[in-house]
Image (cartoon, rainbow over all chains, first blue to last red; front, side):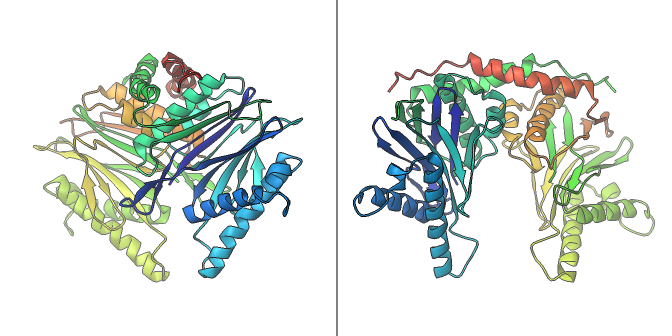
Length: 245
Length: 245
């Protein structure tokens, strides 16, 4: 499994992903699931992947290769006029990659994957997309301002309750740490270290980037304090009375 | 879907279940998922069900019928010497019911269900079991003192963080309300009203029982205050600094 979250804020895009991959519980590894491409001053594009690792690595490698042959091919990732064209290109690549391996193996159910795409191109707003295995995609809106992929459920209630579009980048990172902590505590297939990337609005760069390991002081503080904070929150609620009818 | 939680406390057993059943999102109904049988002063037994509604209703109806023919059959539910024998009996009935309809329909994947069994028999401790579709079961222990069935993930982090075996019945009810509220907010297939039952230790009775509808004052208070309480808890955590490395 996997857990990745992408958020749109007034101040930019904030992304966090775990790094655990597993084939059964007895075969776990660490693989990066967050990748980015930059054209300084013009565009910053990042993806986070969930699903079959061979599929997602193939998609990322193909994207990567295309950026390295700029003379021979159209590199939508680095040249596409809008984030919409980039999402379309990645969607097509994802669908094709999945379909090929499925056809080779005579199946329709395995090898799927999904992708969160985040980025900004000069002259346009920061945008966030969720790309499905079928190659189509949806874009975050003011009603649904963040996307999750992978093991989404444990960490969702706090995101629903805590997210605000005008929150600071710092608070968004804190919120993501709480959401990831709840997920890590409940699902073995989501694991440290975590990757964090902030793409500040109109910066066209990773304005803050970090790998959060188990030695990370801040994450440890959040993890241990959140239990107490939750208990205090719980105690602050009015008490139930067994006499009520 | 469904959401049911059963908890063992020092002071007894606390159970909560929702009542929504659905076949697709366009076909929802209200059905009770909590059932109980009592022998005053001697035993109190309750079950909560999740899964295929025809299966769980059949199991409960068969249990019910057996209690009404005490002269003709062994009624383990009302006469079994221990909760273990009751769990064995219900497990067998559940497996047989599932297997029959699966064989009739030439499938092995559908019609499954699971059951939480809670109760106390005079002279023994209150006990809590989770019964699987295969008919086998596990019992709650001090390491795992509560069971959830159905849509378990959204409401789990707060249970993990808030549960204490020596908490008061009132606090346990409050905790369940928060856990159900988080689940209701995230999954349409879990719905009000909720059923609540407390089986006080050595009382052999439902010492507190209640149906929580959308007009329930206390639940509405919890639901609206929990968002604010979570935000305060979140704000009480130390702030993240983008300068940290």
